[in-house]
Structure formats: C-alpha cells, structure tokens
Length: 355
Image 1 (spheres, rainbow, N blue to C red):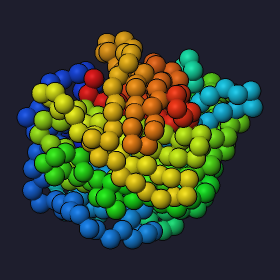
Image 2 (image 1 turned 135 degrees about the horizontal axis):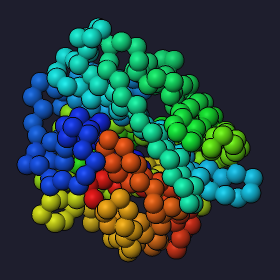
Image 3 (image 1 turned 135 degrees about the vertical axis):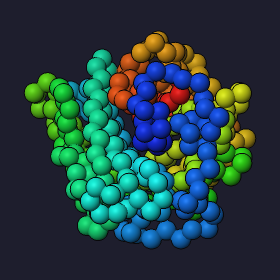
Image 4 (image 1 turned 180 degrees about the vertical axis):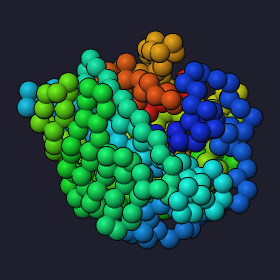
C-alpha cells in the first residue's frame, strides 16, 4: 500500500477481469477480497517475523506484494516520483506447484511521475515457469526484465521500463526494517481483517531515469512495503487512501484510510521516530479529510488533503505534485508523489483506489 500504498491490486485485476471502470462494491468487499478464503492461511496476532525468509513468498496465503516508491530530484531541483510493485495472487490453495500446474498469477506495475507528466506500465505472468517470482536469499523479485535485487535491510537495486520511461536505482538502507501495526500485525477493519506488514522506510536513493530517451541523474529517498494476507478486507470496504511520508524533521509516517460503502472509514497508522522507535496510531488519533479533488480519467479524485494528529502536534496539508498521476492499467488507480506543508514539511507517496 500502497503508497501504494498499493496493496490489493493483483486481486482486483484477477477478480474483476481487469475492469478499469468504477464499479459498485461487491457484497464480498472491494474486488471480492472481503470474502472468506477457505483453505488459505489466516493472519493472526503474535507472529514472529524472520529475515531474510520473510522477504520471500508466502505460498500459504492468497495475496502478497513487494512495493517500492521513491521521491527523487535532479541537479536542477526538479521533482520526480517512481513506483515499482510486484503482486502474487493465488487462484487456489496449494497453488505453488511446478510448471504450468502452478496456480499463482503475478503482476508488475511501474510508474514514473514529474510535475506535468505521468507514465505507467504493467507486466503479467503465470507462476512456475520462471517468468516471475521471488527468492528470499539472496533477495530477488522479478517479472520479465523488471527486478528488485539485493537486501532490503542493506543495499537494493531497482529497475523497470515502459513506453517512454525507465529507471535504474540503487537504494541504501540507513535504518532497520520496521514492523507496522502491532509488531507486524496490521488491522484493516474492526471485524478483524488484517495483513502481515513490514516496511523499509530508511532508503537513500540514487540512479538514472530514462525519459523519452534522455537520461536524468537523480537522488532522494525511497520506501519499501511488504504485505501478505488471505482475507484483508471487510465485506463492505470498497477502496483506500494510503500515505507514506518522510517529514523534514526526520520523522516518518505511514497511515491509511479504508472506506466503507455505507459511509465512514477505518483508519490506522504508525509513527516512525528519528531514533527508530515505533508508535502505532489508532482511529481516534488521526484526522484525515479531502480538501480538493481533481477530475481525472472520468473520476473525482482527492489530490489535496488535510491531515492532523493532534496528540503529536501535527497539522499539515498533503498535496499531489502532479494531480494527474493516474495509473491507466488493467487495474486503474491513482498513485504519485506528494508534498507536505504546515506544522511540518516533507515529501511522500499517496495511493488511492475505488474512486
């Protein structure tokens, strides 16, 4: 998540047949992912995470994703955003078989955003034949010629390309992996739906963007999210707004809002302090509301937000660097870099689905 921030899109594409148009929320929740997932493993509190094993795939669960976003700048001070995501979706329990009997489908999304342009690309693959996959150690996630390679707790390399754009980035971790939610157990509804979720929010980034055949050297910050689950939504949840923010004072903030079809939302988040301490945020501690919408791809999408966490003295606006950052793929959604102003400054990423 998503910014992703970006985290149920593989299931959406597969369960909706790749429909890019807005649709009513099904009775089983957004993309059917609020339905019971008989035969798959369940997310429960108290799991002990283990690395590097958990960098790899979790075939007992129905869906998971490897998700990277980066806020970058060139020598002239121009802003860029980059996204790299790989999703695994199991069509049935015990899907991890060899060859064409494998029941996993893989999907990759890549994006690049400037202040006035946005590019996106997609890759699809069937599991079991080497076209896509993840290896825990040494870590590699790939689909076709797109890849993440290295160590999420150390140095990582990212590459992807599409029509008119591409990027090659080197990422260096300057802090530890972070367990989101309650020691990695991330609640998604009051009814108990949840995912396992950890992040690497401490990457420094440098590399090269390819924009219409022109190379641009960039530096900046990056954030990697890892989640897996089998039933991550409640039956009436039909979309989300997902933020990952780097504040200028060294704090980092992850928060999300899962919207209910009948009104209301479930909110959750985590503060990550400069000294790396983690502080979970409950629903009553977060105030989040849209301030302005942009008409993009036939939808009204909120591209400027008011965000307050009164208990920590935070009162800011979060605004899209490019309000037109629409991922025009089989599964369509908004995703792009944002800037933070107010009681704290900063940058980050925002992902929004279901509009």
